[in-house]
Length: 168
Length: 168
DNA sequence: TATAAAATTTTTAAGCTTAAACTATTTTGA
DNA sequence: TCAAAATAGTTTAAGCTTAAAAATTTTATA
Image (tube, rainbow over the protein chains, first blue to last red):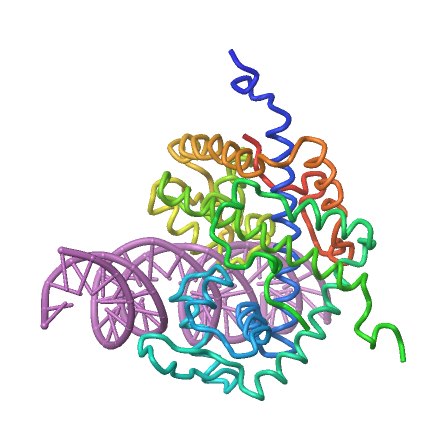
């Protein structure tokens, strides 16, 4: 009988505990952000993520690139972009030479709107993580950076910029 | 002009980086779990979370308690329970003396089903966090435990068991 | 007792998310 | 050349999620 089958694998238990704590913290923070985006900017987290990705891309992105960068399904991006277009925040631009693809850009209004949200977003995070000093933040960040080793062979497209598109 | 307004607050930037990394890792792991629950158990993450909470509660839980414990809206729980009841995994039981409330329990089949999923769930997490040794897991876990200080004044109901309901 | 307030749950409307199917277009290669 | 494969994007069906409103029942209080 292996130690594993005894249900006493403390490494496994410790990893499970770590995961559950990450999940709890992440959900709490997301919930706070969602609430504030809703009440203070009449927006949502997915919209914010999309706008951040577009803000970082000077010339906009193809729907394709957007969904890979955000790691969400392409149908999902279609819906969010539809609503941002309705808002006047984003525009779809035809790509010459390929009638299948569309380039998606923030409008001037969209860029301005995003800047306002991004400044506040950074303030919110700073406040929510008030209890974490710079050393700890850096340390946890480094550990997380190389965290799910088994996941790192997943396609990324984002290497060298693995934290995503937010550049205020 | 303050250092803050110069946009050079490196503590703030470090906290933002930490948040974005947590978000990325959490979403990747959630995505893996969702995929495996779907293909291997014809289930979902929200269903798993609900079943875990009910499994841990010998006598079941009121809808109320369930939604507080999982920190999701009560309407949300209604929908998930509806589907678990359709599956025969869960049953609603009237509470005598209070016709407003319902107690929700795993059925015998539901308990058995959950045990199977929970064992695999722990294995999956263990594999996904393969790159994290026990010391690191413990260390990050401790840091996360006291992480968003600003959030800790939120109602919890879960003190002393802050990592949630999973007890295999 | 009457009835206002509080508690418990469901319903509703809107949006997010995915996988799978579908349409349209471009590229490949026989 | 032109059929097959690949690529880009949308649509669809199902489920998750929330906030707000509604329905029901219990509790408190005047």
